[in-house]
Length: 187
Image 1 (cartoon, rainbow, N blue to C red):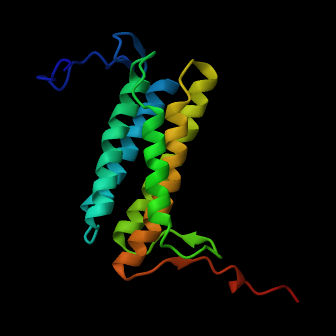
Image 2 (spheres, helix red, strand yellow; image 1 turned 180 degrees about the horizontal axis):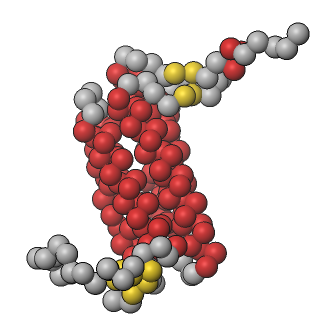
Image 3 (cartoon, rainbow, N blue to C red; image 1 turned 90 degrees about the horizontal axis):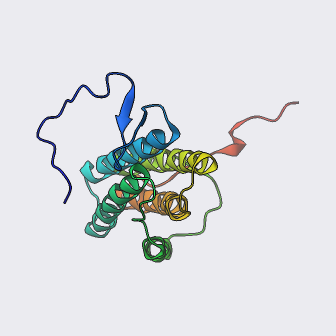
């Protein structure tokens, strides 16, 4: 295990730079810091889902594993050249997604974010996940990174969408469908 933080503030970032896991320093506004910072934000939003009432043990176990994966993914992004997210992690997400999606009815309309507190928090996590994916893509255009982080985030956003559907149904609120016919047609 690496060094533990015994002092929370160091003042070394007061100049607008931060240390990466390999000891190098970059601007706090660098693409790399933005990418792993958004992965950290995603992990926090998943924590909000887990803090909501009525989350089943199966969903809770899945999301807790995802939080561990995201910590690994953030570490990979923080340490240039590190490889922590593996193809097996992505395959596990796909299998989990298929399992949760199996019992859901086919979608015929778009779903609005909502469906109870846990589902609404899940939709927030899904959108943060999409942003993290975009930031990892932008980073990959400027620096060499492995494809697994991007692939993981892509699958995770799909899994989060399916879990939002499950959470909305489990809560009794149901899914909130977009009513595209609500607008009157011009005369």
